[in-house]
Length: 417
Image (tube, rainbow, N blue to C red; front, top):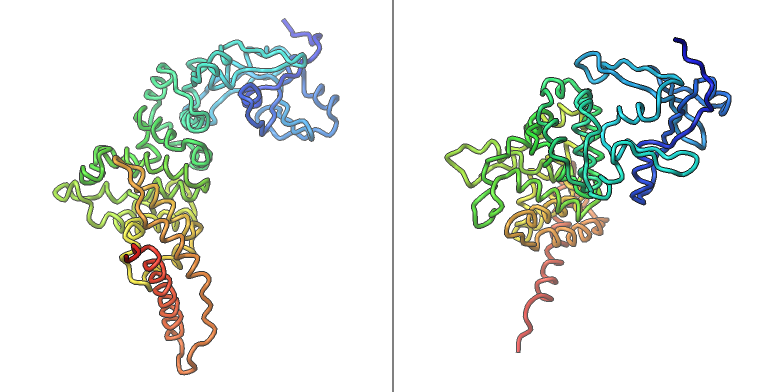
């Protein structure tokens, strides 16, 4: 029987915009679904609409957002993009919402302002719960990373049955995901309030080793001597450090480097445990492998390498020679972290353990960085040539730092009576 198009097309706001409206969060993108309509209806309503969807009709409407026809989806193969899509005026709003990942993303608002919520999204928002709409959740394995990202952004708990589905996702299908899609979800999670939750979700559902193999390798490795690391293993410590870094800095580079700062600990020979001599330099190759696999460029790589090789030196900053202080600051300033970002990572490292303690190294690094940047060496002896000039400028900066440190010590010394 042929479908006869007779109903008036209805436009609904759907997805994340509805969720964020109900949560009273800022709405970034507005997505709409036209139910009971055709492409001709979209063009008639918005003549300047530009089609951006390839496999199915999605139109970009200036001043409105994205408008799509209601659609159904059916998985046809193992790959992320293997879906058959059906669209048209006969597809209902509930059918369109049923293909979405989570109940909190499967709601709509019509012209009358009423929320359409066929799967209990409002109740899940109230319970601060992330729950799958249907078992079709498993049809698109990228949803694992979206779920982990929402856990980081919203700080919601995940339904047990949803976690069970995630545990059963085939690792080979996850590995087949385009790395840019995984990287995008990871970076969104890093920018969130609780980026450590992204890592913890993947750990709990036993999928961290798929794309975050070097981080997963830290599990069951002692973080360090128990008097300094009562929190247990190096993965727990890393997640604590990432959480502290997120409190100190909104920079995704700082947070990225904080996550990777201890990768060398997974390579410590068992007979040396629980100590990790040399883990700072040992982390460089795992960082390079990780960045290469997920397509992170040199800014991310250099930030993480600096954090790995220098975080312990920040803790011991006061004990360093003055010219070595200068060298560390200039090296940090050549990366996107700058000296302040390196200080944030070291401070997070000190706080992200049990017991957490704030040393004076990070604060001193921040102060001395300002001193070093203010040094202007205008007079260089004419007898110096080539590399000698650079060594002279370095020594002059070191001398100024030495004078600054003496002034600090005099100020901090207890007054004689």
